[in-house]
Length: 209
Image (cartoon, rainbow, N blue to C red; front, side):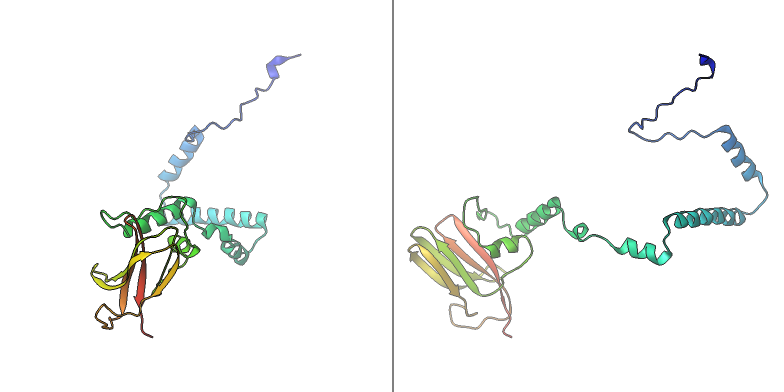
């Protein structure tokens, strides 16, 4: 067997990392000749654009799609592409927690407590309950204080301040302060203090429609 004419098989494995393009001397010579031509840059650009247009038309024929069909295909984006990722949802929840931060007030709720679906929806940014209803549930007998504060953290109304047995409680704030004066429209903060460690806060919006 004559091995002098045996073709060498080149390795086709693509290694990671940047691509190192190697230009042939013929390419450099052609580029140099094109640079030496006494034609304006606009004419050279026009000629290059015509070549690019011809290549684009060839690709369109290979795919068999018109311009309208290509545009329609590009607009058909799957709905899951619009859904936030887990990292985006976590960052959004963290931003909500930072916006409601109050110094020296323990508002962190550990695992294992009962959290209603309305609270979960509020944390995820899906729903927000701004009604004047304040509700909570007690597992043991403890001291409870239900109050309403203004946006400037000023106490405007005290609804309940007593010791309550276990059970489920729900109170409605009528929009008046402790003196019976009807407060103006706006946002207020309802606070439920259970014992000395647990706090529940929610936004209340007075609308008077």
